[in-house]
Image (cartoon, rainbow, N blue to C red; front, side, top):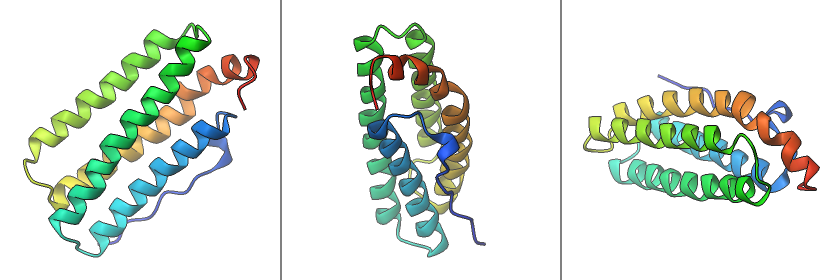
Length: 137
């Protein structure tokens, strides 16, 4: 049962290299997870990828939120709620699967792909103008 890798496209760009690179890293981690599923990797390996993803999203959300505060971004509150919603949904998923199984990994990939594409195409695009006006590239 093969799954297709997700590919970065410039339409996802927010025009800020630092943030685009972080988003690209999220794509890489999802693809690592897909590769692990496709090769029937160990639960330990799945766990390492998932734990890395969780740590990375904390780092990424902090980066965006730092700029929201620095630039007094008017959509910050709504955006931060989206980050919280992501965290809450991720915790529900983690609670559903007490061990890192292939089933958990599949469900996580589905969740991440849907969330990431929607978030990049809609939510993150809203701060693009504000960040650009403050000279962030």
